[in-house]
Length: 392
Image 1 (cartoon, one colour):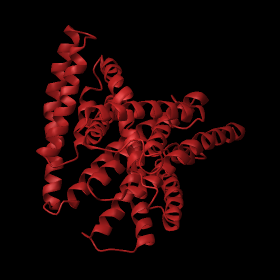
Image 2 (cartoon, one colour):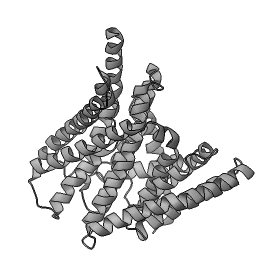
Image 3 (cartoon, one colour):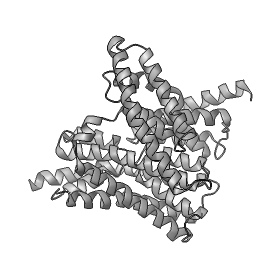
Image 4 (cartoon, helix red, strand yellow):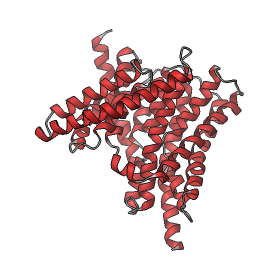
């Protein structure tokens, strides 16, 4: 592998990813969308400036793991436990309805297949992609409207966090079932064993980190040890327990999320993730996205994918919110607040591509869902809260 060509590729990726990321932010779209478009533009499908190679693939995988670790670090475990069964019920509905909707959508387009076939697992994985929720856009909108600290805001935020945890679990099971050597008992036992070990060992690790944090607050050794835990659990999750490495990274983040210096860890790790590995990961999505294979069938599928993806969250979360006692426009507000998609959907799609469960052409559908949901959610929330004030 030519080292100089790697330097050239990195320079091009950083420049285009940053430029298009800033442009996306100016247009009020998520910055990651700009980075994906940058990857598509410099990749083989358009300009052909960068070719995806083993080095960039490894960097992209490190980026995925660090993103999931940061997501775990950003979880407020106390708020998560305090919200109680309502947020859990809403999150479960927010996973099950899109999972069923995505699976059915693919089968309606490409035919129904029996359990265990390639097409069946592809259909299920399309549903898995739909389960992820990205609440960052919703949080910014609720802040702007002054609704983040209300019961509705707390419910949406907590349900979105639980939603991602359940989504990662579903991803772990589906990837496990796809392996021809595995069986349901092995997959289930591996998952249960990993999480049981994470609870016991995680508590011990948390106490050790707490002591180190107390003695050496805000020192570089803390984020370094945190990164060791992240990579260590990622390795153990996949190599020993047979579940996704990103699950291990996410659990590592949750173990440390209540540390006094968790924000300091996130700040230090974010430098590497934001400047190097994150842009490479999102640009690699664009590099892998093939526009050559786009047909009218895929265009129609992408439109249906977006419509089902948005409506499934509104129906699932909204209906469960109504059953949990929310009245008036509140169930609709919760449903709309849960319909944004972002990094986790891309990470899940990337995992499906690496496991051979979906084709790269379906990244077009995922990117379209992220863009439309990110634009539509703030608009609908502002309209709904405006009507709520008028009714009051």
